[in-house]
Image 1 (cartoon, helix red, strand yellow):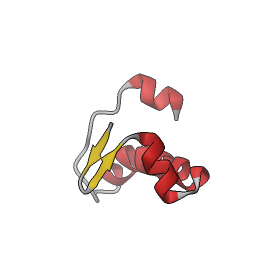
Image 2: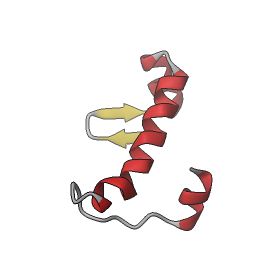
Image 3: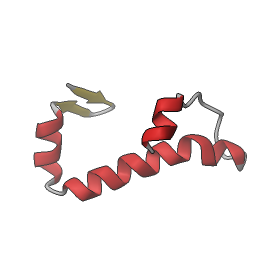
Image 4: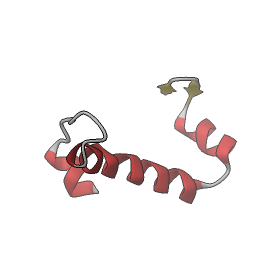
Length: 57
């Protein structure tokens, strides 16, 4: 179940609603990268990024 802000439903429903799996993957990868890039630039508060997330990235 996806429940983030105004998006509610399953991942399959979310993908079907967007209709573009590559766009979703690119967005998720970019959001993941911003977890450590933005704080390094002073644009956001630092967040813990688990080692397995870095490895998957």
